[in-house]
Length: 97
Image 1 (spheres, rainbow, N blue to C red):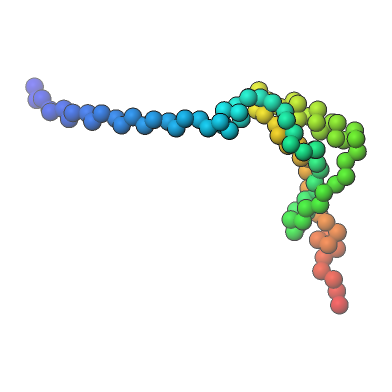
Image 2: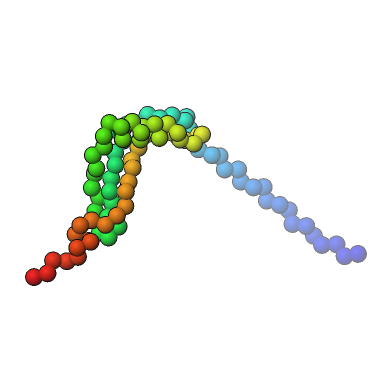
C-alpha cells in the first residue's frame, strides 16, 4: 500500500460582511410611499424621444392602486407608466427639399 502525503489545508479567510446601511435596512420594509405623483411617458423606439402624457384623476388613482399591489418584500417609491411607439418625425421620415 502506497501512502501519499496529505497537504495541510489552509484556513479559509473569514470575510466579514459590512453592516447594512440605514438605507438598505429601510429598503427591506415593504411599503408604498410615492415621492411624487404617478406619471405616464411615451417613448419613441426610433429616436428615443420621451414625452410626458397628462393623466386624469382616474388614471392617477389606478396607478397608485397598482403600486399597492407590489410583491412581498418590495417597496414602491415611484409609479411610472410608459408606452412605446414611433413619433411623428420618425414615422414621416426626413423632410424633402
